Structures are given as structure tokens and as C-alpha cells.
Length: 508
Image 1 (tube, rainbow, N blue to C red):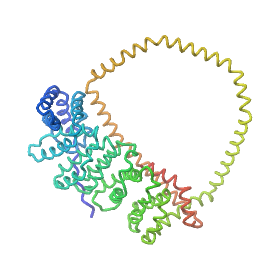
Image 2 (tube, rainbow, N blue to C red):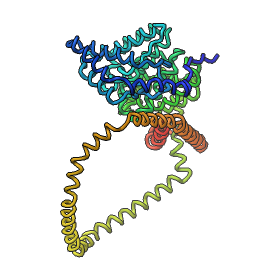
Image 3 (cartoon, helix red, strand yellow):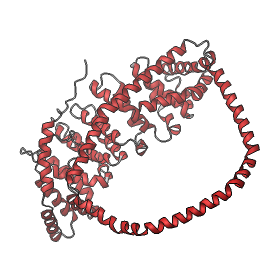
Image 4 (cartoon, rainbow, N blue to C red):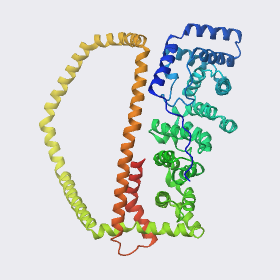
């Protein structure tokens, strides 16, 4: 039987999103920031030595003022920085200034916001939580590490309320905000909080959607190196390729699309030093009965391990008899890859390439010899003929530069004097709606990138992989004799490694 489909919150309609925005935007734009400042000044006067009271009063005031309905605990229909992105510059300045004065209390304040949101969810009235969400986003925007300080405690809390999906999703949203500003912290949150509950019916959809958005926002994966290791990577491999697991087919397919980038993150900055630690787990999974897609991925990964990390061969030698069927199949695959060398020789490509290279080398040597002989003569002639002209040109250029400098001195002084005034005027005169329009454009571009560009690239990479597989199959028909294992290993390093790694990069 197929695994049960995970319950996924129905997507909000465009009308619902517009209604919520129409309720939140006027409140944020018309909020009396002066009244908020008075409230905070009163709190600081009454409790001058207790910053935790100041920030808690800030959160309480914002949550009372932003009385918009909670339609979805994950806010998945909005941009990742909603609702904080709707706050005006003045309100953001007040929030940032107060948070900056309470560094020692920020961890407690962050935990207070999360736990207060969970307590509010117990009330039947359905109190709004936007004020606490704004504070959480304001904290993690500058200090994303706050979310990962107490991950074990939050995982225990998540498991204790696992029968309350709304609370679980609220915890996951609160911690996941760190990842939008720091990829490494986002990966720590995902591996520490969301991976343990991957497969839970009500939580899997958001966990994978968050991972997809995280990897989409951070194109440069190098900032996430060093976070994921073998113990984190192989559960993801099993979820992506093993049939009949706790994920629905659609979620499993979505995870498969993310797998190449997760693989890059797992192998890290120096795969030549780490891949031998992955080989045993790849080898143990490559059984004759594993699914074909998974078998191809395992064999490709083991080939990369043996080709890139020289320590992998010693590890394989130790495990050869323990995993005899897998080792035998892997040996056949490694040997069959040596067909490239035979194909290049038998088809004449190797001979033509060598002949072309020899001609290029010969003509290059002749060209360098001619340059070595004639360059001094032509250089001296150029100096003799062009030197007077260049000197005259240089003198005129200096005169022109002095003249232009004198003409533009007043203009430069005027610009230096008026540019700061112009910048200040533009900053004060630009309405907040312009920034909101920019956020909408960013969301539109993100939608086009996710729903059109990425599927097109995925389809193109799939066609390339199919063509690559067909070429390998056609090459095997030309095999006349099997090379030894060592010769095959050299074939992998010298011939097949580059196109294989190129394809992996394209898929990623």
C-alpha cells in the first residue's frame, strides 16, 4: 500500500491574502509610533535596570496593535520576511534601537516570544501573534545564532506537542527564520528540528518547503559547508530514494530535486579529504534489490568517492568481503567505465585529437620562435617612430586634464555640498508604499524562478542525463576486452571524472 498522504494546509486564496494585507498594512502604516515611544520610555523609567521588561512591553504593545487574523501558522503564502517587511522605517528604527540596548536579555526575550505564542494558541479566542513574529524576525535578522542556542530543548518541546500541529508549525517557523539570514544556522535548525520529524504527516510538507526556500535564497552553498555530515546526509538519501517511506510521492519527488544540492553541502569544501567517510554507508545500501534510481545514485557516488578521495580505496579493501555482493557489482561498474578509452581509440577520435594537438604544438613553437627573433627589432622601430608623437600627446593630455580639473572644481564642490541633502530628502520623501512595491516585485520574481525557471532547468538536466546514459550504453557495445581494476580506476580519474562531475553540477 502507498503511504498516507501528509496533510498539507490548503493554500490561501489570493482573496484571503489581499484581505489580510489590507488589514495589516493600515495598522502598520498608521501605528502611532510616538505612543509606542512613550510606552517604552515609561517602562524604562519604572524599571531602569531590567531590560527584559522593556522588550516584553515592546512585544506586548506590538501584538496588541497588530490585530490581524492568523490564517496560517507558517505564513507560507507570503514572503519569508513577512510581517516584519511591512513595518515602516520609523517603527523598525524603534524596534532595532531597543533590541540593540538589550543584548544580554535577547536570548530570554526570543524564548519568551516563542513560548508566549504557544500559550496564546491555547486560548479559544484565537489571539493574533504578529507582534511576537515581528520581534522574532527583528532579533534573528541581526543575530541568527539565537535560534540555535537551545535546539535540543526546542526539539523536546516539539515532540511534547506533536499532537498539536499548529503549535509544532509555529515552533518550526520561529526557529526557521534564522536560516533566511544565515545558511549555516538554517541548516542547523533544519537538521536539528525538522529532520527528526520528517515523515510526520502534518509537518513533512512545511519541512521540505522550508528546505527548498532556504536553498533557493542562498545560491552560494559554500556558506553552509561543515554543517552536514554522514549521519545527517544518509537519512535524507533514504527519504529521497527509498520507496514506500513516510513521505508522499510528491514530497519525495520534491526532496529528490533538492538532493544534488544537499549532496554538495554534505561533501563540503574538501571532498578529497572527506569522501572516504561516506563510502561504507554508500556500499552497505547498494544491494542487488535496491531501487534502480537509488542504485544508480549509489554507484555514481561510490565512483566519485574512489576517484576523488584516495583513502576510499583502502576503506573499500577492508569492507570488500563484508559486502561482497555490493563490492562485486561496484567492481563491474568501475571496470565498465573503462569503455571510454577503448571507444576513443576504436572510433579514431583519439588519433585525430593527438594529430590536431601535435599541429597546434608545432605552430605554437614556430610562432614563439618568430616572436623571440623579431620582437626586439620591431620594438626599437616603434620607439623611434612613435616616441615624439607619444610625448607630444602626453603633454597635451596633461594640459587638457589641468583645464578640465579647473572647470569642474566648482561643480565637484557643489555636488559634495548638495548630494547629502539630496539623499536625505529622497529618504524622507520616499513613501513606504515604494518599499512595499519592491517587496511585491521580489515575491513575483521568486514565484517565476520557482515555478518556471527551475522546472525548465530540471527538465533540461534530465534530458542531458538521459543522453549521457544512452551514450554509455552505446559505448559498452564496443568493449572488446575488460581492463583490470587498477587500469579502470585510472580511466575514471583521467577520462570519466570530468564529464560526470559536470553533469552533477548541472543537475545541482
